[in-house]
Image (tube, rainbow, N blue to C red; front, side, top):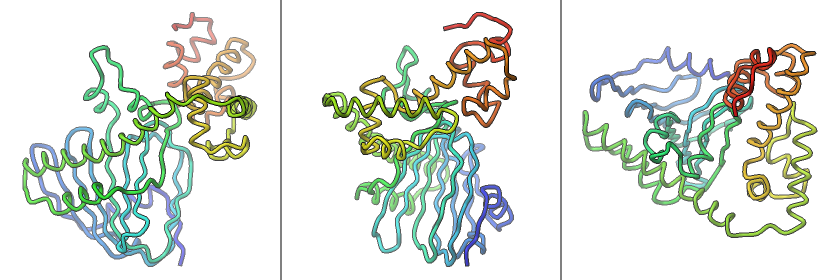
Length: 322
């Protein structure tokens, strides 16, 4: 049997499930319950660790193929870890914040294991790790965006130390406030272990010059993005079109243009939108659609973040603030 569910369907299933709620500390709770029967046999555990960090763990066996349809949406920084019962192909995925694309997730039948997810509000990470000038370290700059497409690093192998931390989280010996503090420390360890490979990769990129052939392919990729700005290919598809491995394309883009492919695309889209607004022939909604924004609110926020004025103010001739 194959099920197709939306994210709203999933949330509704969990809301109708019996659960027990326990207060850890003032205004912070943990929730435990049995997984919705439609999704399989198992249990879930969710905890608000502080304002801006949450932790969720599910253990279950899924007898059915399950397809989950996700709409374009705002997304926080998130780490997800999958540990199959047989401990083969354990992996994690690191999601940056920003706009998550419309996509479909497929979970095969007879999937059994532990799924752990940790969410971080971008504003919390900014408060915790910005320097005295309000700037984030480069590793977090890659992760934290607002009105841009999110970056993600998928299916990375799970190190033994990450396995150990998951076991420590499951076997937490404390209660109340002590439990809250202990688990906060563990999820920050997982955040550090997720960021460290990004830091090392960035250091390698900084020290490795690009050859002429790679530079030409990076510029070819830039041209493809410009020509298809309303409906761009994914980074993986773009890399295939120009004959580069997708991580090499990302590194090349940063070396050539000082940014990622889709940060470059975002700037290009907004520059094109500015020209169209000043031209005054199309409606704001039509311009948003023309440059690839399906959500008018996302377009308006991105435009104001970039230029310091709203699309309407730009159309009326207000001076752009750079």
